[in-house]
Length: 203
Image (cartoon, rainbow, N blue to C red; front, side, top):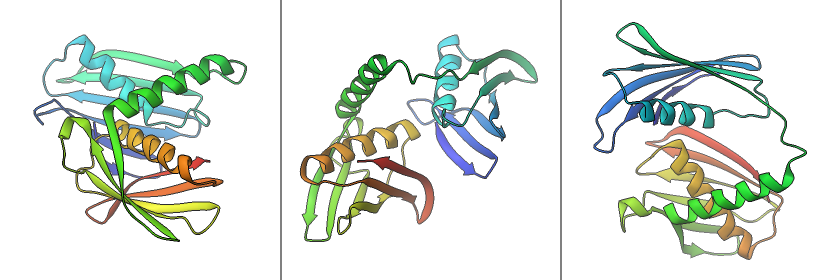
């Protein structure tokens, strides 16, 4: 899934297969704490494609501020499926949450890695790699380490998917955590000088 445009209340995406062929276009519209999504398939999709696409859209949302998510799927004007998620509070389920976090980190480390290429007193520069793309970096992260609140930007040559970007940020965060003590990390992500994503993470 690739982000096409992002606005205050509506974002649009396209879905591609492994060969880069476009399969569908999608939109997410936010109305307060409720979100409505639509996926329009070019060809009638297999059920596992529908499930995967819906899951990727849901991952784009901040569950802390969303109450309900409705996603409807279409092909040639015919509705294929409609699914709804209702947010539930996981605050009392810390054990499960921590296990899920560990699994996410392990999956991220299998999918990607980072390499420190330059460091001085105030800045560190890392190259970011996705395993599936071999030995060529997909982006460069420049981190200002001069304050307890770290900030920086990632300049992507290959923007990838939002899931891949999240994995890269998690692995970068763990790498910084090994050597530095900090309160927060704020990252701005760029592709062709356009902001495509942002992340703010507690240290």
